[in-house]
Image (cartoon, rainbow, N blue to C red):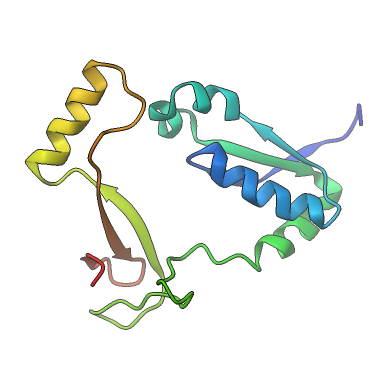
Length: 139
């Protein structure tokens, strides 16, 4: 393993997400190495600043890893396991994101930062369509 060259196959905001994908790749017989997971586990608020948790694979396994990751949908699903549909354009490419658009979520973020709590007490989630950019709340 000493002279192997590694290639980044995926990045994640939190290590819990990365561990799930790492398990899938290892089940397929691919050696996976995580980078920056301990740093982000120590302080999750710096994840975006350092580029998240990186999953690395050997260059020789890169194409196989990409094929395995192709089976995983990165888009949001509903409670029935079906892809969510944008009410504006009908696309199924919907991402879940957290927002700080109201006073309550902003104050929660500021308060959490002041007392150095890793995550805000209150977070507002919305869905955003990758196709048209429309933001909406779940029904």
